[in-house]
Image (tube, rainbow, N blue to C red; front, top):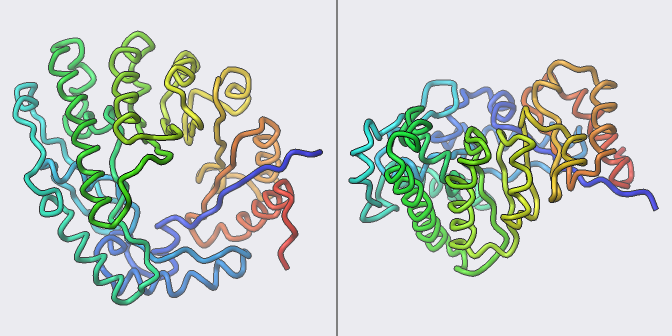
Length: 330
């Protein structure tokens, strides 16, 4: 029997903003703008033969960081950015969780915006952003580039910071889940930690593996999923040690689907990147999709980022449906 290739497709925040004729930052805080975008996207979804997305606040990775005191900047027309708040190793000694995560950083405003959105669109997703970044990425965002020399200059404080990042993220996760009525129980869980691969294998074993393991244990993950974009071939054996169920390399420049098929000890995903869709023809994208599928990833994902890509996305969806064994859309 021919293997069926699962896939995932979605609309990025950038194409949503284009459909609604609103600046990108408005999708974080302007309920009128959010509703306009999600009211207009069904026409595009229908042309592509996919379900329209549920309304939600724009994708956001920094709520937890903001509760610790990091300033988040919402630049007009752009994605938000976070500014480092640890300016020297001594600042690590004073890191504390806020008394109330729900009253700290951008969380109160995000919750108010979500409440207004739910009043207008009761079908909206109940969430204010990704629950956390992984411990290495959290540490790097809190401290900036100097974090990557900290293990060599002050190893005890590097470990103190990473331990704090794990425990604080878990604490934040429990509070937010409780607020939204999510049961506190064991379930599959994932960690997004793009900066972890900056460290070579020896440092990785000391600075990454134990903290990822601690985080998975803390969330009681029944399946361990990992997203990390800078891992190299020499990091891959650690995935088996960590009992990773699925590895998502996303835009990892050091590993290809062919290499992963040969060297990755755990199942992995594939992706057609936004720049591939921008730069390649529809036929070339279909050929790329078939090649990725030949290495048998768990799934292949791709996203529409602008309206001009509609024809290319339709071509990708055609081949994705074919290899998934789905009936062709009208």
